[in-house]
Amino acid sequence: MRLDKFLKINRIIKRRTLAKDAIDKGFVLKNGRRVKPSSEVSSGDEIQINFANRILVVKVMENMEVEVISEEKRDS
Figure 1: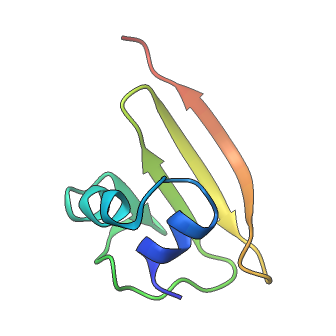
Figure 2 (figure 1 turned 135 degrees about the vertical axis):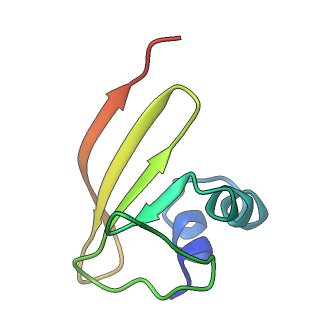
């Protein structure tokens, strides 16, 4: 499954176009690396999403669901 679609289906990012923009701008890392929105997500991958006010790290499970590894709030 594509990374941008994965973020939308699991309700991490509301719309696929927003997910694509976030990935293109480098706010989303897969296994610690910048990737394209079309990169494939597989079980065991670790995805880090840098929101404006927090950093969310999730792990992809076998059934393409997410397990939250850490959630860190940023100071404004």
